[in-house]
Image (cartoon, rainbow over all chains, first blue to last red; front, side):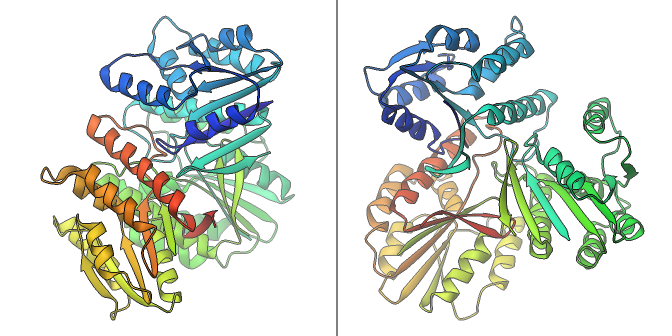
Length: 169
Length: 169
Length: 169
């Protein structure tokens, strides 16, 4: 089963996703796309880590998401990816990575994996269209990705103020 | 019948509006507010054009929206305006245009037209309030316009990740 | 009873909150967090004032929100706070104020006040993550505050294009 959890910054989307993972009763494998690039991000990562059960396995995957999902998915596993926005960011801003390829690989695979997958991603498109072509590209790719995944997903939620709203399923 | 389709950038709002127009069974007249100002915008316009049925008539209307609606509305026509955000942008940034007048003309007319009208617009107000008085004015006018149109509309949708949510109707 | 009204810029959240206050039949005390800092803000405040009934008492509270709520709450009063976003802004950007303390005081109190409280706040987290650590902090604190208040609130609404959507209650 595939679930997509959308929400704004600090909307409570990660907490909701973690709660779903916990309640699944499956073995939870946490796939972290964040990299400890600077002190601010390190603090954000530490904050997220504290809130997660200690026995969850963590797999750091800044870029090769499709490969990690393929390697770790099994019928008794719940893969929790937090978050797609940072993955998109990592792919777009790393000159050695082809975003189109990564995106394609994910979309080809994500609907056919055994077990359960929960994908967390930021809603970034409901503010003013940002200045700068790269920001606009980021917003565009994010929106396209959400649309493609929402089509494949069994359930889609938008979390606002910690309150999950069902968009699909 | 008047319908307002809101959504963030790349939320799937245009696709949803086009699907509604197609399903109407009426003669669809596509009212494009975009102008080919630069190569990026040209690419966006081309992208949108490819997704539309070839037999739809297209009327380019960067500013005089009320006049175009008046001229083309008839009981067997579905007018699809994509999008109000660019129309607002065109009106605000063209020194020869009075936005207040354009806005007034639209609001006086839109509730009394024969046939069906589908208006697409960007939700731009749920991000951080942007720096710069002109950006704030843009966000304000957009919000005011949406409120006024939502009052007049028979149905209002918010599209998130390609999934239309009914706000009214 | 505690109600939280969220919405984007010019979403109609204040009008909806004022309508709820009016319909409460209680004595409405309007708690304004805005300060007349510049001419633009003065115009915004004047715009809001015109839309409110003249007999509502107004209490200006840029920072000490918990104290004002404590002082004015009583079983026959409806306290309408508009808005938390400016209050957060005032607390974060005033070097003499400790935001953590103000936040703590509000959260300790708000669930235990007599009468009715309606809190209005901007949804600012659904746009692109802004550049600048202070903007990110603002978005983060806003999101955390909304989550904490939504947990305590009896009812939570998100207003889009003037149309209130029930998130809780």
